[in-house]
Image 1 (spheres, rainbow, N blue to C red):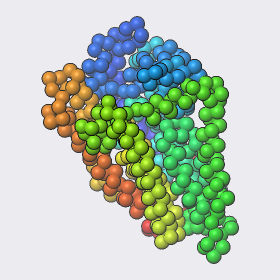
Image 2 (cartoon, one colour):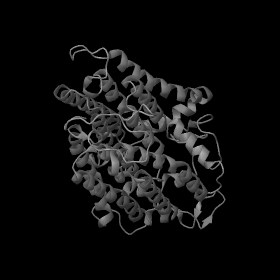
Image 3 (cartoon, helix red, strand yellow):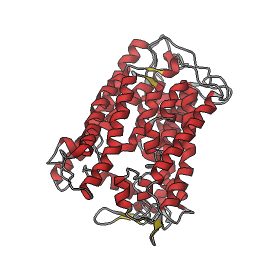
Image 4 (cartoon, rainbow, N blue to C red):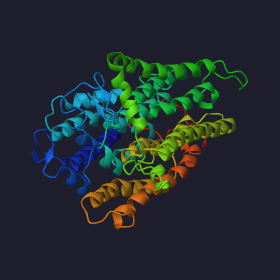
Length: 457
């Protein structure tokens, strides 16, 4: 019953999330199905903007064009012919959600109906793993703000399901299944996640290291001898499963329309750090970071991925130090730290990316102050950015020192950045909530994973 209650709470939050975004729809519609009157003004002034509604026009979604197959980028870098700026599975979800829609309001509603089960299933899995701590997902402010802001819920489910199958298994055998079997299924889920929104791919490396070192206490590798053997073959198999899954999902689109598939990735690579990206790169390098300053934009395009990779290496290395002390490679903690590095250093930091981070707050035992502070900084960004856009385009002022909205954006940008730096370390030393929290009742089977001593992940 407790697990059912958790999912019901999540359902109520998703309804609130839809109502929040639906405020921008109608009551009138033009010949393209765009809401009126004054859609653009209302989306900023009333803070009800969503990428789902906005992209109804401009990506051939309203024309029900199947994505990628006939697509390309124009000379000025704009996607046409059904290209959307997301990986292929998200493109298919977008296309399927639009099939029976004729206005942006219908598209938002149908998208919400398609996406909601992913959010509910995520709540269920988090509840099975971490008990009532899953309320951070189910009733947290980020789910109201961003559940239907973009298409994040499927990729979050892929990541959470990958954690679940490693630690809880599935079916009657649960976690009694061999580690390599569980990790291979997890890798397939991470590969599917890549085909939704890319970021779960970064979790493959710590998963490989977890398998390499024999899993929980190093005891799940049958070939381990006197604590020294490493399962290289198993680690390679896990990496191959993730890579193979991502390739297999993309192959049909590459065959049907390679230019369209390539365009979705090229569009993101060419995107510049500007006022819409909310990243430390744009604000940290002002005023040289103006989009028309090609040399600085090129520098950002090099520094951003390079430093992200450095942060990944540092996280994995510190995880190895912890493994040597405690006997278990903390792949979940390392994954969370790597995600912090990604969010901090990527040239785009969209508000809805917070949904990627919330499951880490559920699955890792960190101090509540970190979570509350991050939610507050996120609210400052999520609300402030659109109110500031309103001031810039429709108000009497919009300077960085003019009004609360602009200051809220600065709190959001730099508050999140500072917190991500701290969370990078806090996650790396945190215990998993699965180590000592029983799951909520109501799911199939009883987890077979043993409770470990404090400090194990």
